[in-house]
View 1 (tube, helix red, strand yellow):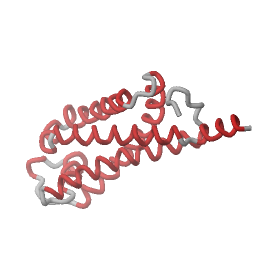
View 2 (view 1 turned 90 degrees about the vertical axis):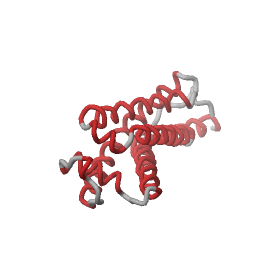
View 3 (view 1 turned 30 degrees about the horizontal axis):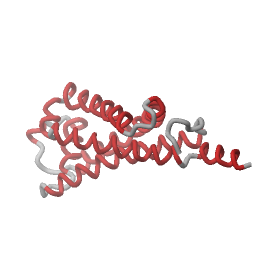
View 4 (view 1 turned 60 degrees about the vertical axis):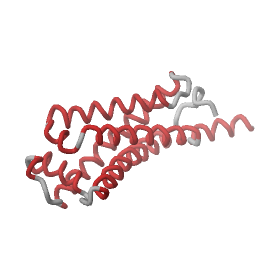
Amino acid sequence: MSHEHHPKPTQGDILYEMFFCGGVGGAVIVLFFLAVDVMAARPLYTPSLVGSVLYLGADPATVEEVSLSAVSFATFAHLMSFSLVGLMASMVVRRVEEKSGGSFAVPALTLLAVLEGASLLVFGVIRPELGAAVGHQLIFAANFLSAVAMVAFLRQAHDTSEAVALAKHREAV
């Protein structure tokens, strides 16, 4: 189905997209940094570093051990923030997708810009030393993968939505 002519989403579509889009985007970032940490032989170090600095007030240069409390704080904050990202993405991507004629790149780049803006706020303005400790290139790579995964999920969701199924049913009748 063409991405230009989707029927208006139902409330169920919006809730499904919001919840799962945020879950997909957040999970991609978590798994990306887990893989980076495992390859560096220090599993869970990045969420521990982020949690220690942002929520426990540690200096990034002093964080060497993994703190499960810090991992918990970082994970909770990440889940909450990606719930908001899922809400925003489910609304914005549909509009951007329609205006761009069904393009994949335009919504993905739009989401990437949003994720990078949020990262810039946290890792560039609020705690720039944390951005340097995590690595700006790694943050960008994680945001890129997350944006692509969220748009891929949303395109699939739009094509199989309740509203699309209802429209097809009405056409058949």
